[in-house]
Image 1 (spheres, rainbow, N blue to C red):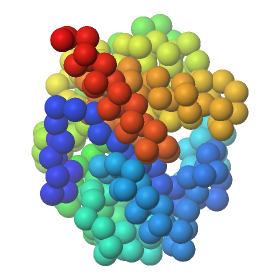
Image 2 (cartoon, one colour):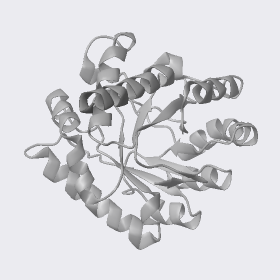
Image 3 (tube, rainbow, N blue to C red):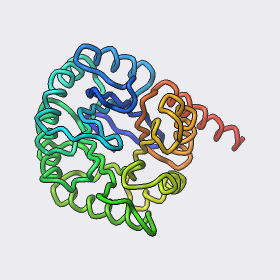
Length: 263
């Protein structure tokens, strides 16, 4: 997959979550223009391959802010990152207006939790020649065969992307763990995540410190690392995480285990 000037293939890479919000569920991920450079520098040092900037929390029960609020939160941090680091930057937004601003300011990818279903997002991404992560979402909790619903949604969104002119090598897919799914469905999706690859696109997994693991957010790192190792075994291209260093080590450990098991 292409993101900016970088190509990603044949392994699992870490996408670092950098939030520009006062209310993200994991408080250690919260940043502003005064802390963001230090945070990004540490993420790069720890092994992140992509930075994912979020200007709106989409945690359960979140209160939506508008596109202009997202833009105001993004504007200076995004420019600072692009001026100081040579790393692909993704922006987590479902507002086409915010995506248009972010891509014009140097962002390389849009991470859309509504999978190109809101407004002219696909056309906006295509206009900038950018990349996109298409995530499954729904207004109501899934029922029945969750994979049938998820694959149908993602397939339709991929068609929208291609019809708009987004390059096939600039698309990845996210099954949307934690969105429109209960705990059992989240684990069903996680354990069968490789089934999404039947659509022919690389995958991104986002499980970092999510409520499906129980307890408080500060107690969920171990379970997150287990899910990252499972992502490696299932051929997932990106894991989107809060704890970069720990997840990079988990990926390396899983590759080493696989090598040892074959020798």
